[in-house]
Image 1 (tube, rainbow, N blue to C red):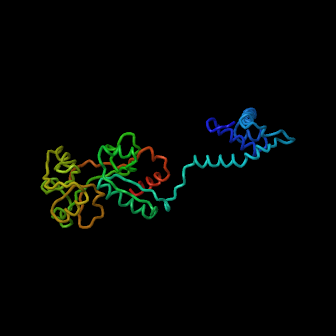
Image 2: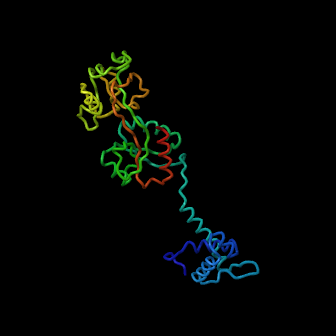
Image 3: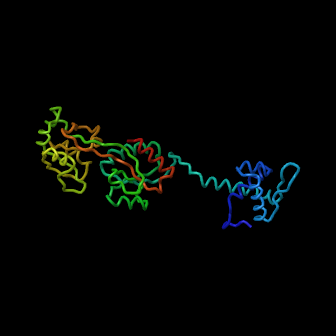
Length: 297
């Protein structure tokens, strides 16, 4: 007798084909088997179910009562198995998925805001939790499912994670719209170095960064008089002072009250990527979410 322990789905597929075709030859062709292989499968079926199942007739074969009793259940089981193996359908309009995204405050402004706008329109019932990127802890967060997506750079992408490039970012020099330096139209290196600067230090308390490294290569320095831990507060500080700041271009794009100028020296930019764990790689819901995210950048 067939038991779950030694169940061979190929036997069920063969029985279904034989019941439909009422011919060993046609059933074999349907399953891409030779006629002898199909005959061997029928022998196994007969032994497993302890019934002849099919008898020879003038044209093909005819099922026994036992075979007819099995017809509907076998087709139902095969249909359920096929449905189980198919990827689930995903309907954004009715999806209630809760998504957790780890991001820096820069990524919140540059990526998360347009993404949430698109998500609200296309998947209004989805929920999103935005949490801070926690350095080396991101890998563990992704592995245990505490975070679904991380907006990071290639250098900070945890090993063994899937990742997709979102965009390349460059730096600009931002200041209040009425700043004297903004009236010149072009910022010279001497003028740039003479200004009072603000910068963002995620760790807090740092007064140097990529801009200072670029200046050092030219034998120059600048005065950084303010260090803050968040990009999001910086635009308001710039609007209310004569401080200037070298910031990612997307951070200040379209913001009122600010003037944006090209820095007078080459400052290396960076690439932003979205990273995720292999456990969500084939999920239709997460695939859709990633497509929307990439489309927003």
